[in-house]
Structure formats: C-alpha cells, structure tokens
Length: 393
Image 1 (cartoon, rainbow, N blue to C red):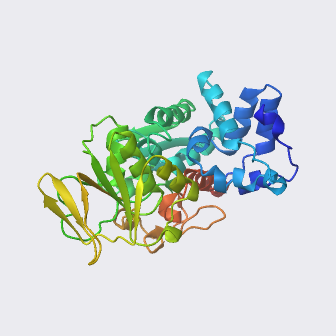
Image 2 (tube, helix red, strand yellow):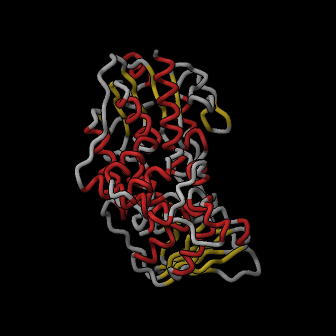
Image 3 (cartoon, helix red, strand yellow):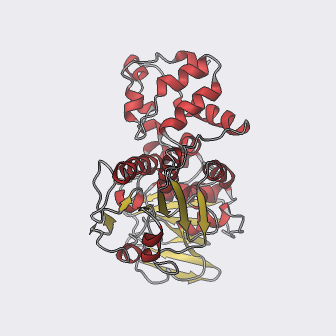
C-alpha cells in the first residue's frame, strides 16, 4: 500500500513545498490507518480546494519533488494520488464543510475562481456571511473553464463549488462587478471586499490574420469543449506558445481527434515556461514541437491556414490555429476600484495578509501574482481571509 511507504517525516519537506502547507504526513498516516474521511478533513483544513489540487498541481516540482525518498534514490511517495483517493472518498460520501456561528460581518468576493473560493470558505468557517460575484454563468473560474478536461472536469469543479455553497456561501452569477454592478454598490453593502478576478483574455499576437475564423485563443478553446460546445478542429492544429496552457491546448486537441498537432514556440526548448513533465507528456501524446518559430502572419489557403514563419523557415499548414501566449492583465476592471495601487497591471498587496492600499479591499490569485498555479491562488485566498478576519475584529 502506497501510504505505508511514507516515512511520516517530522519536519516534512513535502508539506513545506506545498503553498497551502497541507500536513502531508498527517493525511497519509490517516489513510494508512483506514481513516480516509479523517485524511480528507486534514487536507481540507489546509486547502479547501484539495480535490482540484490533487489533479492539477505540479506535484513533480512541489510536494513529490521535495520528498525525502529522492535522497535514497527511490521513487517519491505518490502524494497526489493519495490525495485524490482521500478527496474522492470524501465527496462520494457527501462530505460537508464546517461553518461557524454568525458574527454579523459581511464580505463580498469578486470573481468565483480558486482564490475567491478559498477566501469565501475560510471566512464562512469563521462565521462571516459571504457573497461571491462572478460574470460567468458557472462558478469555479479557471477550474471550470480553463483547466484542460483531461486534468479536471467541470463536474469536479462544480462539486467543490457546491460544497462551499452548502456551507452557506452565496453565489451570484452573471454579475459583472465594475460594469453592470459598481464597486460603490458593493462597498455600501459589505464590511470588506476580496478581489480574485484572475487575468484577462489571451494576449493577441499582433500579426495579420489572427482574427480570421479558425484562429482561436487557447482559453476560449478549452472553455468551449469543457462546456459541451462542439469545436471543429480539422486534421491539423498549430498551437502558438510555450507555456503550460499551450501544452494543455495541444494535448486536448490530440484527444479531440486532431491527427497532427504542432506547438510553435519562438524560443528554444530550454526557454519554455511549461513544466518538463508537461512537455514530456505532450510528446508521448504525439504533439510535435517546432522551436525558434515565431509566426509572422496567418494566411488563408483554401480551407486551411498557412502559418508564415521568418525567412528561411518553411510555412506550417493547419486547419485550426490556437494562440496560447499568456493572458492580459485586467487593468480596465482594476482601474474601477478606488485607491488601489497597481504595478504592471497587478494589484499590489501586503504579502502577509493580502490587504491592498485601500484597507477595505483585499486580493489574491492571478490578479496579484500574474498567473501561477491553482494551489497558489488557494493559499493567497485563505491568507487574505485571515487578514480580513483580523482587520474586521
């Protein structure tokens, strides 16, 4: 049994490597002693998004990457798989979150992604009434719309949202705070506000042809097939970018039936921002990589595209092009919030408690860190919740 391989280190480097500092030896010990529900509760105490993080976390470079088994040339404990086991058991048995008695305080969370979910759950556990606003029809943020289906399904995302909703958190979807609903209105109704709005749409390349039909941005592509909207890709797909989202889009395209999928990246293999294990998985899935390939234009050629590359490089033919070169900052939305300091399109916060330059506002997640992992957003949301509790009292 995998749990019995764990050494249950007292000063566990795996727990230190986790941004939410899950007590890994504790939750694995509970699995080893057949207390799987207790294991799940130990995970959720630290990270309410334990289900999603068990599936999307880059464990190779976090908890499993720090496992002491590496020191004796042995395979690391499969922490991610053990966490999935505990969380699947918890949800299959109707697990619920604890909630504290009402303390009369009210907090709004703007955005319904991982940072806001973690913040809302922690506040509700401590008796705060929380309302989460999001402009999309479904809550969950990138967990629902942006993480590739082969990693995390919308149904799993909804399970986490529903667990938090059952704890007493209110969700208002279709509410675009900053446009249809002003921050002034939010301020008048709540004692504090948490901003967890993530980032904006995929950045444009700024080259001819990128607005042609059949040229998609990666997040829209992933959101479309995750919400059961058919995506006709054709046989050949070209993905532009070198990060984890580009990998997600390319692997998803292969699994949706594209015969030839190529990732075109403007630099070399060593400069890719995608994790090495993601890169290797894509290669195993049959994705081809073209390095030092910076597109200069997309030209319609019959029913397909010709991806024009710099002189000396042969053009790449594709039926669909997917752009995945990073997300833009939500400067327009953030600019609607009064007296909040921004730096390069990100909200500036006190890293200890998530508080912004406007003391009534706290923030966390991608709108603060510029785009990191789900587990980082969960850690920042919970940290901000503790900051809000301290400020309110």
